Length: 162
Image (cartoon, rainbow, N blue to C red):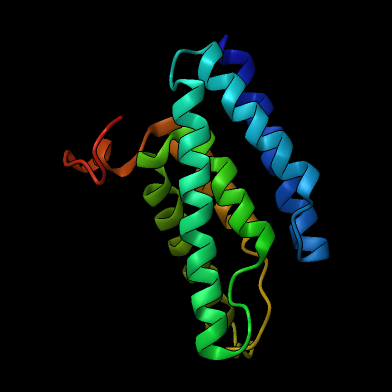
């Protein structure tokens, strides 16, 4: 069954990434489909229970929403789009709360590499430039879905397992 789920996830993430690249936003319907797909896939493949998938999604969304709002209060502008926050919540339905730090770390590293490549190519990058974060989040989710969270790679848990 996983031979069908993983390609479907890849296609959905690719569509989200392309949309975010073009329009600098992730549609609510795409995030809802990602959330429901994660709940269904977890149950279908016996990877994560539906209750833990929903709980993980709510906690991840709430935590990143607080970060988003804290940054807004500090700087007077949003540093993370609401679609990205919803995407992270939906991602948690796929990989559980224990996989979210790995998704975020992968996305941040890929984003920094991309910005670094822009700078090295002589392009100007400022702190107020808007960058689509969805493609990096999508790549991070795909990597963690296929390979597993970072604790699998380094041998130490980042968060306790449910």
